[in-house]
Image (cartoon, rainbow over all chains, first blue to last red):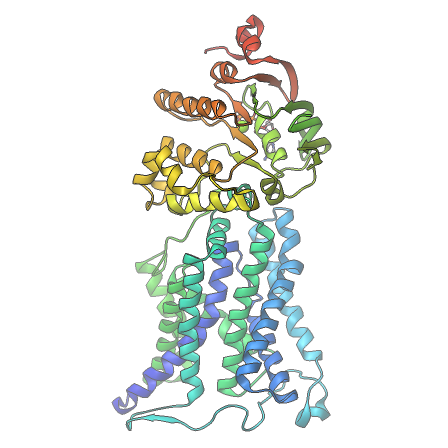
Length: 309
Length: 238
Ligand SMILES: Nc1ncnc2c1ncn2[C@@H]1O[C@H](COP(=O)(O)OP(=O)(O)OP(=O)(O)O)[C@@H](O)[C@H]1O
Ligand SMILES: [Mg+2]
């Protein structure tokens, strides 16, 4: 390994990690509050990126404005997901496995729908988004590099990703600890029955949780697409397993844990490329996870709230 | 008109009919007890009033409104607050947060001069001393105090108490009944379910004996407590 490139590699790892962290935030929120492993989270990550692409490439919106609008779209898709995939199962007290399968079905449907969406501009002849690669129009994303000395240079968008990930993590943590909605979410996470008897509208809490979690996953998707300037209907697959590894590493349901887990996976992946080549990078995340769980079976910030009723 | 009226209520779990046409009422300012053996259907009735279970037949009306099909949060908003069986405190949340949830449950019913977290900690000093602890670290008796305090903060028009003395040591059972007696003296309306039947009957203005999902007997608390048949059949060891 070339030590000259170490700072650059670390920076790349942190950046990669912040994408995983952002993705894992929403993932862990749904798991922690609703006890659902939502395998459609990656599909919403992708759908929100597609929404941003329409806003930027189609309507010519500024990428920040598009990010905000698209994240709302992502949140609403999350509410829709809850109503279609989980609501009925919840009423019937269906086992967790049913919800898991249902979320996989929704993910497949979302991915199938995207392939049918009409395309725009330069891609007009192909008419559908399909599985093709799409790019954002030139000039829609800030370009150039910020240089820090001779050993480190970063595109501004990557810095933005890092800042957004940290801000949203602290924001989410604050919301959960200090606001009424956060308190209600924690109450529902612990006992839906006790929460209902305290006058909490559980269905409203579920809907809000899905909105927030999916908006977060959507932000991750938009930033991912912007940074790599690519958009495909299967872009969620790349982050799905890494995000899962991140939340298990962090201790299922822990907000801080999922972010730290995301950074560890991102760093391990990038450093493994630097050390041994890219063939290993996908395996490394899981080797780290495996070793970690041998030492701390509950994850780094484990002992998540267990349900009592 | 009674504050709570339950009319011909039937509730099933799948094929099992747990409550088979029960009628009773609770007047404003009354303490009404439902006593009966294990599995008689007491909790089922309480949870159906609270909207956690659905009636298969019959009506529940509260303050003149038919609440039979209302969701739980709306029933709580109307003023029916339950202290559930087995102390449904939120064990991972602090004592103070549990109380804050109770206060939030008062919602629009909250009025000037109503209880606050501070006044509740005065009434139950142990809760003040433990306010920062996760509620799960309290002893059984302390958890029951917390559950009662939390329900009072919600300013109930009707307080449902499902076996508040369950699983407590004799001294604590005495304490819990002293609290219920104090609530009665304040003029609160309470529907009390107890296996500790004699103690409950002595406190109650009116009581119902439930047997396998049906009302077997009813009368004033004093009548039932003095009734030889009741004593033999339902108050056995007490
Ligand atoms: N979730 C459930 N599924 C199936 N049957 C149930 C369920 N809950 C209660 N039952 C049955 O319904 C009947 C009434 O139960 P319920 O809990 O209302 O009794 P209870 O009077 O509260 O008893 P206890 O004094 O033990 O609390 C019992 O026969 C019980 O086995
Ligand atoms: Mg019971």
